[in-house]
Length: 329
Ligand code: UT7
Image 1 (tube, rainbow, N blue to C red):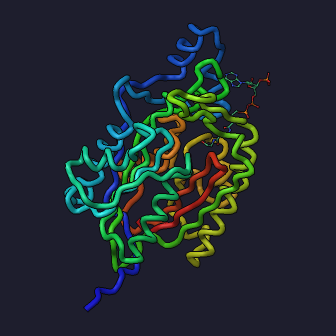
Image 2: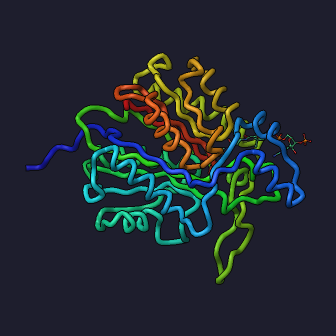
Image 3: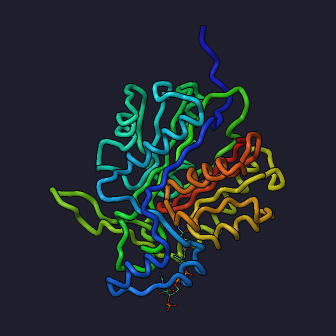
């Protein structure tokens, strides 16, 4: 007899990890001054809300950050690595060109056999990965998924470009997503528009035995800002409509942590009280695919996001990609 596919998926545990080296804005001012590049704590705070970020030490790989976050999420879910039957790592800073960071993470977790793959949607990566895992669980092809966002952006920053290097940081966040008779994930909404590839990219690649092209991050900040403000609002409304909910049902908004002005603008358009907006960009900077699961874990462990709360997760970034997942925690 066939077992019917479970109707829903639900987050059963969250975890995160930040590398110990914390750089305040003043540390960045000093680091850049040594290169003849001028910035200030006042500019960074006023334009972005960022006060600090964490950078991984030399020799630490993306999979190491992912491993620490995964162990914390598995412990919170009361699951052993052996019980995981799907691993997805959202990252733009993988350990190597191939194999996937997910396969490396699987090995570091001491398990083998379940499908493991990376998902590349830059800062929207975790939201994409969660939507993919939800679909796989609802289709009956997985029951206990480990979904990770992990990044070491400090390795792809141009420290001579003050318009980008002060914005990003390293870290990882993870969730365990399990089959459930109750929701769980209510709806998701994903998009991409490749016409905007050039406004946020790392254009280099590996060819002929060496790096070809520029392997450092390039961003047209104002262009990204303008697009982000529009799509974060449209995807929020789309995912609410798809789930048959309204803004008034939201307990928490956890948008991609890139710029406090974009985040507050999104919350305001949704008529959400400012305290319902989870903010970690001040302490983490922009950790790309790690930012949403990091912020979720901080919100859960601080007791703000509780079982049954309705939470909206939103991603936006290179590609251009964007999307949202609405869930009952
Ligand atoms: O992760 C994917 C999603 N990413 C985002 O959502 C990022 C979206 N973009 C942004 O957050 C903002 O556009 C930035 C924070 C990147 C830039 O803020 P802005 O208010 O758009 O500033 P701007 O780029 O228009 O630059 C304003 C001024 C310029 O000087 P002038 O030309 O007016 O004299 C820049 O040269 O600020 C200057 N500036 C800086 N000054 C001190 C740029 N970066 C710095 C800096 N320190 N680090």
